[in-house]
Amino acid sequence: MGFLLGQVIATLMEAVAAALAGYPGGLGGLARSATPPWWATSLGLAGLWVGFAVAILVAYRAGGLAPWPGQWRPRWGDLAYVPLGVACQFAVDVLYALWHPHGVSAPVHRLFDSTSGPTFALVGTLSVLGAPVFEEWLFRGVLYRALAEGARARFSRRVSVALGAVGSGLLFGLAHVELVQLAGLAGLGVVLALLAERSRRLVPSWVTHASFNATAFVALVLQRAH
Image 1 (cartoon, one colour):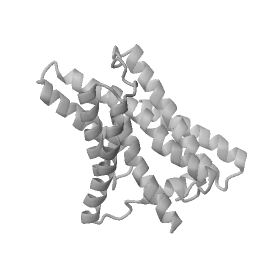
Image 2 (cartoon, rainbow, N blue to C red):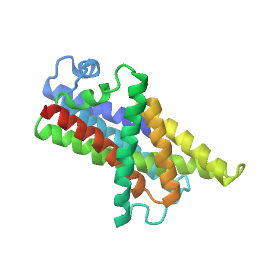
Image 3 (cartoon, rainbow, N blue to C red):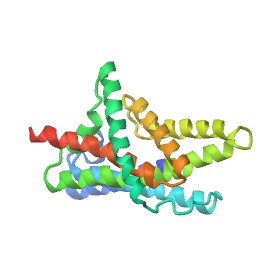
Image 4 (cartoon, one colour):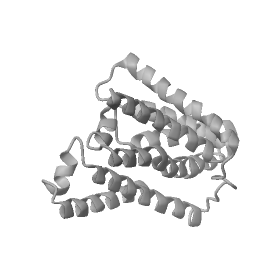
């Protein structure tokens, strides 16, 4: 419901912005565009995150899910998760290179092809640092915990963790609405859920997630430089 609410808010924000900017075709033109303008991308992310935030608040206040103590408290040791995120990105790249699917880089091009200079930096910052905050909070801090802790009434701890990790990983992949990238994103979601379970915090999974995204962003920067 939080995801759907975010989509609705994002659509409304994009519709208003398209009307104010006089974008050709309005909201329909944005939906059909392979490379929407930077402001549409930024508003789409912001609207989605509002929906995520509402879902998180409902889970904490009405759902009876207490946050992990200090779940966003950073530690110096969290920097060790940066190489893990980079390794996950390379592992996904290698697997897709063996499979040779069409359109693997389409989401990256959709986000960045219409940006340059300051707008490129803005969308990059939102994608690398902002998106992982809200996604980790919702998918690992709420959905993973709800699935795993809810399953412990019937299953062992190991089975419950596995069910929560796989379930939240699949939801994480599906939420990106990218069929080609589903397997890689779902696999990443499983890794991030296991990190959250192991540390009982969200910073390790956020650092891993951010460095995963940053690796793709740096590759795009290098590609543009050439």
